[in-house]
Length: 330
Image (cartoon, rainbow, N blue to C red; front, side, top):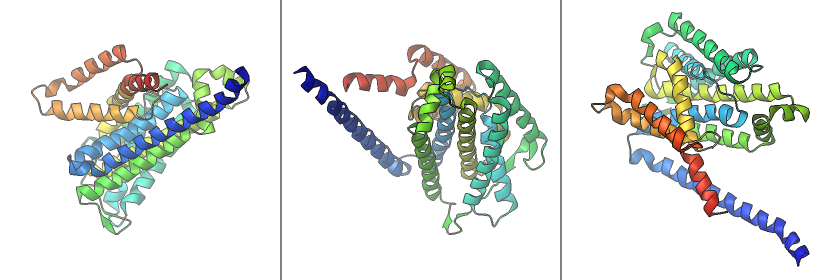
């Protein structure tokens, strides 16, 4: 009897994993369907803003949630992607938007490589402070540079024609382009997290000395995670510039780095959907409060919500929902 139960245990586990995977795939299909019909139910520009910040938060979550590295300088990559894309599209009218976005993403990737080489050997608060210092350095570079427009920023960046064929002047066409970019970025993060590389990152996060003792080149893994996170943050910034036809110092300020931390922790650090929910909540609250008499208190209200959620939901909103789901469907 005991031998029979022991033989059936692995098959029961596989069956449970198969059902969980099926439910997860159905959930993603439902989210994809919602995303396809969303611009007919809400203002497309508002939805595009959520998607851009959601991609930014997902990129940050890859670094914090899976590699255990808290960066206070991710705004530098968002702004770099935005400024490079905005400058190229504004200066060269014949350039198509996808080329401008790729160029901005590549520049953010190179900056991420530089930041990573300089900071990755530090840990904890020292790593955070180094990234903050480097980001502030980039902020002053953007202020003084002529190609960024200084404090005025870049205005009137043309959306252009996608592949030289599809006009992005329509908000609906622009939305589906942004949605496709977000799906690409999210799929890349999901694949990374569930790959052997992602498993090593989790091992480093949980116990770095043990990962070193197992023979892993920890610095190389963390550097690659940092560069990938920077690249996706740059992709978000480049896309955001094309959507709003604007690149400004707001994206380079340290407040933006703090805002993405808020989004990630609020939604659920270390979860795939947490940053998406966190970005949706923060952007929605900013939009609603900005139109209310409490417009000057947006930062204070967001801070209060953040404190309450951190104290009440240590795993974030999605993290707590995941715990409840596993408890009920165990």
